[in-house]
Image (tube, rainbow, N blue to C red; front, side, top):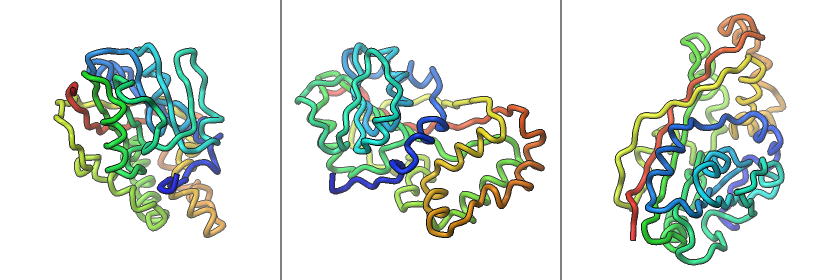
Length: 250
């Protein structure tokens, strides 16, 4: 547990409520990677956003997270078992999983130790897939506001690991035979309040608010409402998905 950088336990309930899901096309692609669809390990599961999609395609999903608070708020599913465990020491048996998946989580891991753990638990024909998304896209005026917030106002409060997300996982180490990945985009329809509730789950927002005692969302509300239009009107929110995936191994 020594490497666990806990940025989300303090607002685990909001994380579970306001983080987006992932597109069905992503789970279809991921499920096609390993030779078998027995057990998937969702590493850094958080409150289970990826575990639920994997459970529709695998016989069993084990979702682990080092945060007990995150696991406490994870959405149950009959084929998902949630456990408190770090990415680098899962407690899973050797050669026991067909897929190792990390959704919006890999950048927090100790890379070398996680890769060693992934190799240990993967069954023959298993695969590894890591994915992330960066800032949501809505419209040019809204995007300009969110970019100023993310890179300007709360920019200095992002943990250093955020750089891997900004670089869209292109620069992460990935020591496996790599599979070609499709372009993927996730979309949801949200009102302005829903969108701002999501923004407040950012690690940088939470740290900024704690250390400065101010709320940059409320301070910029007039500007974001002007950019959004009618606050109660749902807008399409889009996240490009950036992923790295292995071919079946072993």
